[in-house]
Image (cartoon, rainbow, N blue to C red; front, side, top):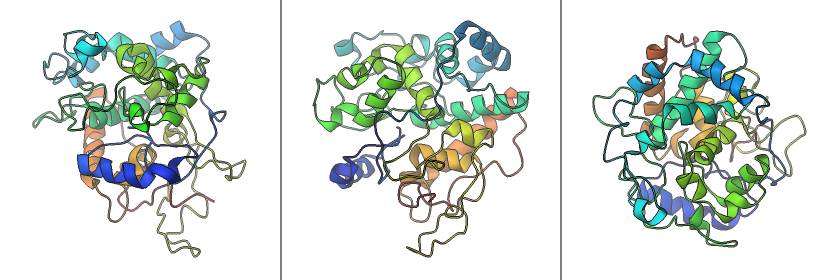
Length: 342
């Protein structure tokens, strides 16, 4: 699921954190202690030429490779939502109607910068890193599958691989916070992210008011994950030149560099070990689920190690050379939410 970025977090974070840890949730976007405004969309830029982007991505990532990576999930009947009848979803496995190759490529193409900067190896590495996180967030995790079976579950609370209660049905404006449980490949979570995603896509509050659109419409759900990947988060108090959290894209292409507060190891002000010394895969894990998987005393460090293993397997299948120092499981990093870069 995706990291949270609202002004209301201090009010509800403790209750939600207890619930999530008890249920073993993964969370892209739900473990910061910071806030940002809806207007902030970071450096996310919608593609101006979708068709050309699609063709470029297909060259970098052919369907034959995608079929190999998703062999464990594509035809798996367990990869169906428990609420599929309620939402009118297909009876087919999710890999045959939601996580299809064409749907994924089209979703990736929505972000102009995605796999569109740097040399060919860097562009392929971005695809591999994106898929490795999908594998951890919504994959089968079946023994013997080195890729993690990416593209299995869609909606947290219903999929066979989530033990959560029945709390993520469509809600109306001002509905309970639980209505914004994870949906889509990276499990977009929390009202602030649904709202910001809608504004970035030019539909304002539509996804805030109708969150299940991310489950029922793969174009929207996959776009939600690519939005989060390309979105840098700013707060009311972050300096103009330093976001609370950079985008995963900027980290991958080397555009992000640690500040003095990120990298010394221990901050004199609060004795928190930040340990974010270089742009690497651990930073990306930290952005997605740092409060649960990263640093000393993390609740689920095994999940971060899974992401690294999935990246290695996917990169090898794609013929990607992983740069020296890029493989990192964020075990020595403090979370951006409680150990800021400024």
